[in-house]
Length: 118
Image (cartoon, rainbow, N blue to C red; front, side, top):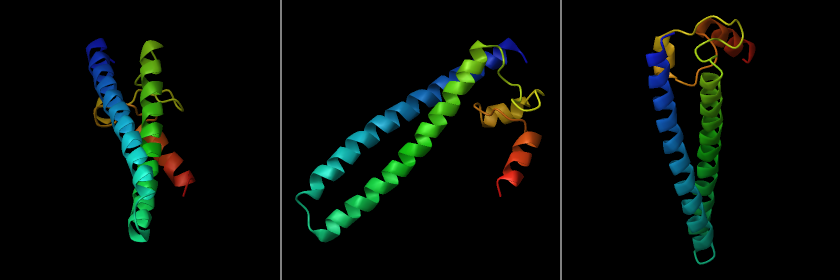
């Protein structure tokens, strides 16, 4: 895999990481606002805030998981292991990495994993 491509993916990963961190920070502020407004609202408002809070927690968990995948990919870049499947060690196609720069499995191994998890 070319060094130029890996640098491009590193920049893409760092950009995604910054966006997720900014999103998590804003969600945390929004969640605080929801919990503060719950003290002064009526029952319907409180129920709505709880639903919004649960949704934000779920989105936060997804972002946190994606952040971990991004950090792992950045670590693999530093270890010169980026772009190789962690199961079979085959090179992951550049098209897959362009779409999902934090991918750690080739398509074949990912498909096997998904079938096993059904």
